[in-house]
Image (tube, rainbow, N blue to C red; front, top):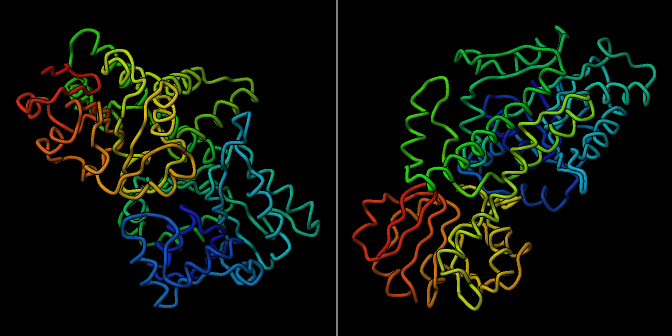
Length: 442
């Protein structure tokens, strides 16, 4: 089989590489000539563990190719996947569908035979209907269900674990009533069917909504445990033990019950906002999601206040060292990362900031100014009044505490990800403050 993957971004590139690993011929299309040039040279434009080797192996085999020319890729394809970005529209929180619609209209001019258009991009309810309408407006001779089908096949890829998520997914969701479309998707995902992966066939609107509902629910779990963490600090409880006690209930589960500085990244913020806007448009507002958005936004300033309070009520003139800039480990993605707001808030309070991240500093330098960038975790600590851990990279989990003490002006660590055990810190002579757990004073 042969597919065209439109978009060589995070979702498109990972999906293209994984489909080609299944033995399918994949042409990955992107208008960014520099990106395609980079891929042709064997380089990967994003940081994702295992992706470089997977892309290289399948380009070497000839199953995975890259191009900027959409027409030939679409004409010969059994299925055309749309995997372009749908960022939040500036100012109102709606999903920006301009890239999706532009691709759909360009595809319409290349369709022949019975074409299958598969939406991988995260899109609001009704987007598939609108794509269908636009294609028939551009090509009146084409009829949906006869000459082409539009299918919703949302992705559920976690940055840092995307290949594993594609190869061993919790579920596959296909939104279409077309038997032809379902049959083609069954063939494309045949290796996963053989592994008894749960497959849910729904109508298109249900599939579109399922993606948003899933991300909003996970964002809600994160926000809920952060609210409980605040309560733990007030009453003297330990949020990690509370989370374990909750998560051992199989109805709740342990995942996403980790207190911290709030969710960020390219998915949860924009998808929660888009779901909220869609619900308002349809006259059925999701108040829980609205609250989650508001609480998560405020959470970042709560972390700034936490640092300021730990430093005696002011950071004016103080040096604050930051470890971790990306919104999560194992990615170079800093989109809507908590670190951006926390650093800006500390700078607004008069602090000078030094920072280090294993892979995220190049991207961060485009968003932040007046930051002293370090080459290691220890490089940023000289004379610092506080060390703030924002992203839980593995290399931060076993820091040399004696070396930290010798470098810092004050031995104070604020661990916003709770990566150290309280008992391990109690005898180190370091003042250690975490989230939702008892404070260790020295």
